[in-house]
Length: 312
Image 1 (cartoon, rainbow, N blue to C red):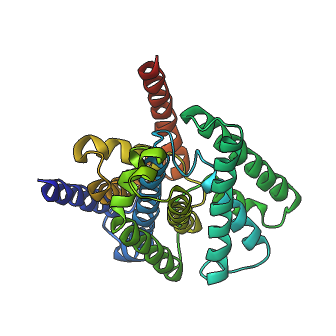
Image 2 (cartoon, rainbow, N blue to C red):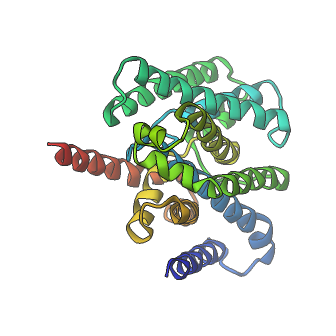
């Protein structure tokens, strides 16, 4: 039954990719536009969406917090800040040092957000979210300060910070795809450990898990998936929040099915958002990050109100 649902999710993803390839001012009349521009862009949307969806599912299960996602926890902001630093120093995006720096930024921001919430003894849903927002806002402010002082390349980097799917080099797509695929395989074969944390750290500890080690392990996995996504698309929010919640309705809470379904769901969501962004106001283009924020922010508020009523 679950394999059938995953199959249908794959069909939906294939349909979203086909629509993305077909739609555009030139239609299907110029094959080179489809092969050289739309195909790499569609592939980029799939990779970024899958990475963010996967990262969101890992965070939500590990922290037992339905409001967790790489954007809200500051993970994406940390990765973006490291990417901007690399770009300003002239480090090529398809190099290993670039990805290492982006991963370090993502992991550090995540750990700081978690540490701040934990040190304040306020590891509640709202406390962790507030901590992530504060850390993410501070990092974003530093990035904006840097961009305002670096006028020569600030315009191109500003588009990167805003978040969007634009043309990507084959090398960049290949490295990010390998990272997201690697994170998926490792996390998928660790789904039982992640399921334990869905019960809470205390129960996981009594069932034989080591919370500290597991937290570092899954923080690293989620940060790596986020880094692979940010390297291509910059800061794109709410994909990692919405995709796991929506697919959880059909696939249940077990990470055995939630992880692959979240990756596919994120890829579908971002492919559709990117298609809308580049066609609805053509020839102007709306960054994908703006589309996902317009949809994701009301979803976040609804989720926050729903959880608040549940605790009342």
